[in-house]
Image (cartoon, rainbow, N blue to C red):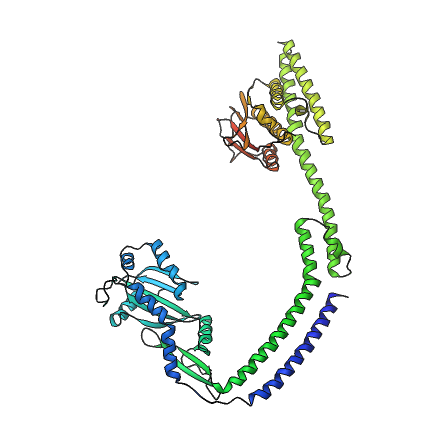
Length: 526
């Protein structure tokens, strides 16, 4: 059965359930609406004023108590933002305050803190000065994109001034945002429906027989109405209707749970679960989880089959690319450098034939031996074995033989300082890579740097967690920022990266080159 047909059957079943619930609710509403009567109403205006006073009590308390505080007087004279963050900002949540400002006597902002979205200062400095001249404890409202803001202010004075007659040292202003969430909370606390509307709005709900609607203007600092607060309170006559509404809500909740449960189960089993299997298989690059899905006869099983085919193609391509890259690095760092050094050695021997035949013959024998070893290396690379130099002798001896071979190509001297115990703690792959890096750096020093001396050292780092290999020369050097990079430098970086090691190549024109490698230490010598 296809997924489209399954969803069509599901939607049909849900439609039948919805129609049954709707018919039940309509019948109950008609029965209960006739029983709702208007029987009483309280002292609405007095209730509203007491409610507003109670709602603003925490805002007023914060402004008046915190403004009469010696520490705040000191802060107004010498602001300390760290103190303010600890003592002011962290108190906002406890008093349900959304914004706080500390102002100078001239109305300039010294410090401000907010919960959530930041707001600008309540008034411009000149407006603030005009307001506090008339009322040192201002209380007003202002428009806000999400509703209105209620502001309260108080002069900053010493705590000993209980009568608050001393000159103000600044002003503390706090605000609370009357947004929809706040109005909903207030309505829930008062068992009313609370809303705001601009002055003169014609769509304000009226009281009628079932509700009593109270209106309270909210004025700004100039005593102009910025918004009107409407509180709609249910009368006792509609209590029975409320009970009916609660029952209707329960019916719709049950229906919603049925809808959500059926949809969630269907989506999980028919779509989300197969897609998760495909996604996990793609992340792990593993086709095994796809096989149960492929056995199903639907749209997603065909997608899974295509993914499985792509895995096989990617694996084949990856193996081919990795093998080509490995062969390229091995040929460049090992075989090519050895052949190039052999060519240089033969050229040097040729110049010695007329003047020193025995020395020329000795160098030719060295080149011949090195070429035989290179041939063995080629065979080893073909069969996947390690280089010949490390199979027959120690790391230090292999490096010494490498230097002896390169000396056939020129007069460069080599200095070795290798701790064999450190080399033995390196994995064989790391030792092979180290030898190839030494071959590359030595070849570059002689061929391009015209170096007279090349030194190699291998020791533990100070913390004993890594082996530090340093190859340095006194050649002509180069500028890494402008020099044309050959493949050898890239090979060094790639080789050490694959081993989890690091490489640092530093050089300056006329100051030689220094290559530093850090290899992680292994307890195994295999």
